[in-house]
Image 1 (cartoon, rainbow, N blue to C red):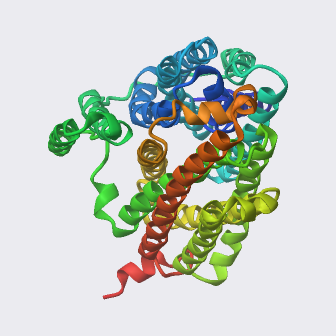
Image 2 (cartoon, one colour):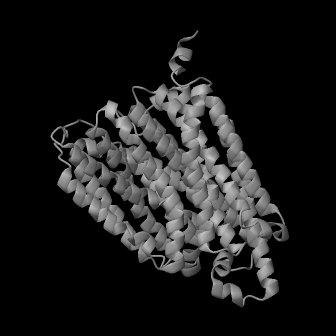
Image 3 (cartoon, one colour):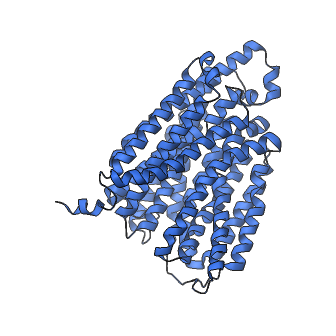
Length: 497
C-alpha cells in the first residue's frame, strides 16, 4: 500500500498519526479537571456523568464501523471525515450554553474520535512490516500515557488562567495540521476489500447501552418507568445478539468469547474501565467542592495516577518474564484495591481529619491506583495477544472497546449513585456542587449553610467511592481469569491434556 514511501515520509506520517491520536485521547482526560469549573458556569451537575459517557459511548460504538469503512474506501477519506466531525464537535463544545448542549456536542466529538483512533493505528500498521512494527509501538503507547498525564494538568491550567472553551478549541490547530501532513506525505492506493458493515448491529447495541445508561443516570427522575426502560433495553440487546449470530461479519466476533483467556480479558477490561472512572471523573469534584482546592491541585492528583500507570506497565512486563501473567495481574489488583481503600477512607473520615491530609493523601492513593491499573492492563493485554495470534488485531480492538464501554457504564452507575445520594442527603439544595465550586457563590453562603452543604456533598461523593471500591474488588476477582503461565508458554499449557 505504501511501498513507495521513503523513510522520511513514513516518519512524517507516523508523526501525523500520533498527533491525531493525541487530539482524540486527550479529550477523554482534559475535561476531568475542568468539569467542576464548567459546572459552576453552566449548571446542571446532574448531567456531569453524561459529559463523559456520551463521548466514550459514541467513540466505542463507531470504532468497528470505521475499521470496515477504512478497508472499503481507504484510510485517508475515513480519517478526513472523522477528523472533520471531531473538530466540528470541538468548536460546538466551546460554544455550549448549557450542560445538555455540551453532552450532545461531546457525542459529536466521540463520533469523530472513533475514526481517528482506529484509522491512525491502521495506517501505522500499513506502513511497517511486523518485524519493524514493534519498534513503532512504544511511540503509539506513549500517546495514551502522555495524554493521560498532560490532559488533567493542561485542563487545570487553561481553566485557572484562561477560559474553559479553550480546552476544546486548542485541538483545532493540531487537527488541521494532521490532515495537512497526511494529505502531503501519505501515499495511498486503496485496496478493494469486500466487507459488510454491521450498521444495524451497531445501532441496536447503541440503543441497548443508551437505554441502560438513561435508566441508571436518571433513576431519581424516572420512577417506575425505569423498569420499562430496562426491559426494553434488554429486549434490544437480545435482538442484537440474535443478529450477530447471523451476520457474516459481526460487530463482536464470536471467537472473542469462545476462548477463555480472551473472554476473561474482555470482562476484565470492562471492569477496569468502570473502576478508572470512579477516580478520574469524581476525585477532582471531591477535591474542589469538599476540600476547597483549586483545579491545579486536582489536576495534579489525576496526573500522578496517569504517570504511575505507564511506569507500572513497563515494570510489570519484566516481572511477568520471571513470574506469570496471573501473579502479575493479581499483584496489580492488590495495589488498585489498596489505593481505592485509602481514597474511600479519606473521603469517609471526618473533615477535621481529612483536611490536614488533603495536600498529599489523595495524590498518593491515586498513584497506587494508577500503578495497579497499569499492571493489570499490561498482564491482560500481553496474555490476550499471545492467546489470539490469528486474531490479534480484532482482539486488541475488542479490549479497547470493552474498556470504553466499561468506562461508560461506570460513569453512569457512579453518576446515578451521586445524584440519588444528593437527593436524599440535601433534597432542598439546588445544584449544590455548582454552588460549592463557584468561589463567588461559596463565599456568600452563611457558615451554617456552607457546613451543611459540604457535609451533604461529602457524604454523597463518599458513597461514590464506596461503589468504586466494590468495582475495584470485582476487577481484582476478574484477574484470576488471566492464565497462570509465563509469557510464551500459554499454548504449551493449552496443549496439555
